[in-house]
Length: 156
Image (cartoon, rainbow, N blue to C red; front, side):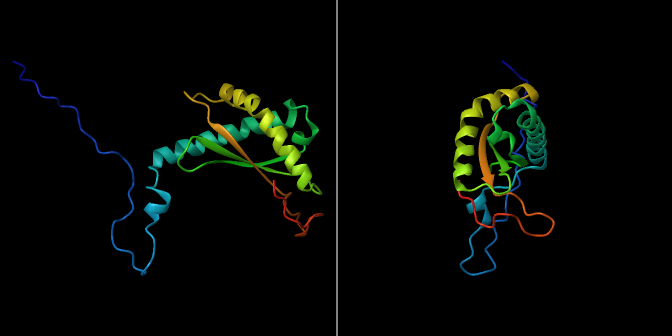
C-alpha cells in the first residue's frame, strides 16, 4: 500500500480575468466577451519579444536580400501579434505615390515570398513553431509637413 501523497502544487492558471461585476452602463457589453481574458504579463512580454525579433529580421531581409523592386521599396512599420492566434501582422507602407494597383501587385508578391520569409524568421528565432505572417499594406506615412503626394486611401 502506497502511503505517499502527491505533494506537487496544483496551481490555477495564471490568467488575468476581467471582473464579473455587472456593467455600470445599461446595455454595455463585458469586454471579456469581446476580447477574451487579458494575457498574463509574462506571456505578453514574450509576444512582444517575438515581435521585435521578427521585425529586426524582416527589416534586414526586405532591405537587402529580396531582389523584387516592388517589395524592396516597402517600408516596414512594425510587427504586431494577432490576438488569439499564432499569427503575426506585418505592417508595411507603400512608397509615396503608389496607388491601388501597386498595392495589389505588392500583396501578390508578398504572398509568394511568404514561405521564404518564414524560413528566414525560423532561422533567426528559437521557437518550436514559426508564426504565420499576415501582411497589411498601408499608404505611405505623411511627411513632416502633414501632406503626402497621394491623399487617397489604398485598399489592398
